[in-house]
Image 1 (cartoon, rainbow, N blue to C red):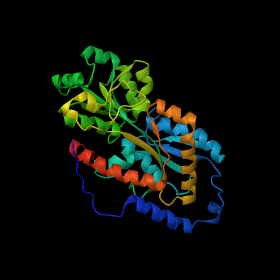
Image 2: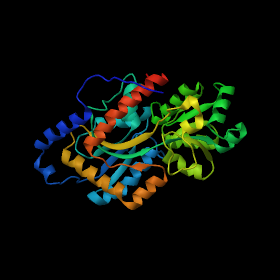
Image 3: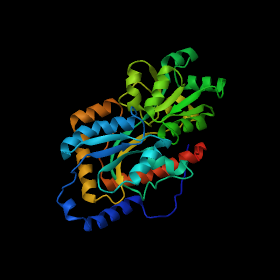
Image 4: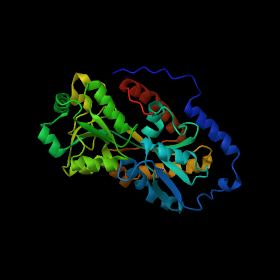
Length: 341
């Protein structure tokens, strides 16, 4: 499916970030220039419930950041409204470096197109710090339920869904998340219908998947990996354009789905952001330490084993990535017809 999007002419996000960082740097107080931050604990707001990939990645970084800065970094889960509750909290927090957001493709790529009105501006209210990781989603079913329905692959699933329209349901981590939109894209391309069951994060949704209360989920791979390895969930396909090294025997949706799913791709990403106006020296110090942590052999191996590709790019590079992702997902939202009031 080809999507052609013509965004309004405006100054690019990357240019805006570079300009704002430069201006703020010139006005920095001496205390920041001397590197006195942090003098108290720093919280990383995760806008979803514990147990999902956003939470997993934030908690993976906390020990390294706490050691690097000599202050405790704390994960603060603030779930709700597809990540919008937590994002709003950070957007309205003081720009002093003591509150950060583990943002997602949902909070900063999808929700601008999906929601009629957001309680925050993903561009004006934040300064990007760094991309933490990119991950494919994975189409999973409860193993026992898949066996009962005779579903061994994506095409089996499509046949089963079409045989009982409206009787299957699709779990997600919330309205507007990449998990939700990956499923909506699948539905629109295959002509299937499944009832959407939004949860307050991947953790609660996976609990219902394992219990057999939900039929299918297009989950972020790291949060589903343990249940796949335990045999409680069966992975039908990954949503990326290429197979995942973490699940090399699992095909992509495009490979497994036939002509109807040609061009299907719906990966996710996660990254740190700070409230707009946060001093550039703080932003740069956090970016440097996160990049260092992500490049360490132990962290790299751990993340890649779960299907995550470590990031660590600069604030300007991350800003450009966010810009590109918004353009892409605006087209996906439009094509899927998904909307949230």
